[in-house]
Length: 348
Ligand SMILES: NC(=O)c1ccc[n+]([C@@H]2O[C@H](COP(=O)([O-])OP(=O)(O)OC[C@H]3O[C@@H](n4cnc5c(N)ncnc54)[C@H](O)[C@@H]3O)[C@@H](O)[C@H]2O)c1
Image 1 (cartoon, rainbow, N blue to C red):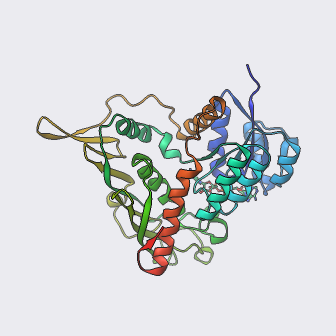
Image 2: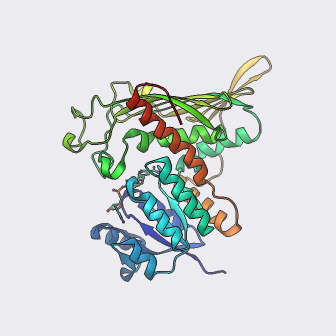
Image 3: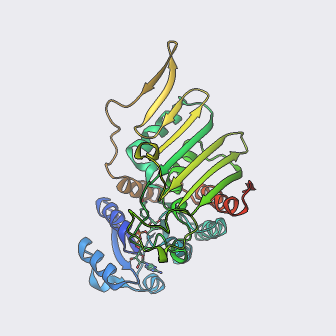
């Protein structure tokens, strides 16, 4: 068997543990180095996953200089994605980066260009695409059962769910609130099903109403510096399609109304994410179809996304979640913040 692809992890916090499981389960990869600015994080992760103590770093530039790597896996807070990814490309590595790809469309463009220059793949870890629901819905789209999608709606509202852990609420580290934490997931899923149409404009409102009054929440309001705790947006695409999005960490809403869902409707049928459902006319009736036998894909979307990335690298295929798609998502997210600030529709 050919030698395994050598992976270097940058950022060994919460989500990195799910990535480590993916790298461990893939027969073609091994994590050979870990970098985290926090000693405890790098040492605990190395111990848990059996990475050598002498392969731990507090600076990724040093790691990239000292260790020969094929893949860099960027799991730092959002504000550091771009610099770590570009450094990875400059060291000749393929790069997997957590969502959101970056904190602006310009940063994302820099990442795409660095990847092109290095002739290496950039993949954004949009995990929902790789889980059972995402794969099921995409199969219906590919079979032509939905037709041309012209309207969609995506919702992921937490009634009381401001993260009290990590750096999610810190603007310097994360740059955005629920839009970057949650909205990016449902936006990517809707766009993936719609085949990434070209966005034209966004009209959005962003609110910061409840996070500073943290009853029923565990975070420190003094540390809450991201711009929003709720956002609602309406996006127009060049092909005439439209999409609405609503996301929150704190909202006075019932759990039932808050439930995560992505709905897209086309000329032949409609889709709902949760539970995965196809709506179509048959014999004069509008029928809902759900899989009786679930698709045979890995239970963990994180394992499946890493498998897809490794397969693309080994077989010379395109990135499963390329930077160009993430750029469309990021332009829309930039548009949501710009429109929220301006109080009117903006071009993206
Ligand atoms: N796909 C998902 O479902 C999902 C879930 C949670 C988080 N995320 C994303 O993953 C990323 C990380 O989130 P998390 O929850 O794991 O955060 P975390 O705070 O638990 O971990 C981040 C780690 O990065 C380290 N770090 C910070 N700057 C660094 C640097 N310059 N070099 C090396 N290490 C550095 C921190 O010390 C920390 O250990 C974010 O972009 C977040 O949006 C994705």
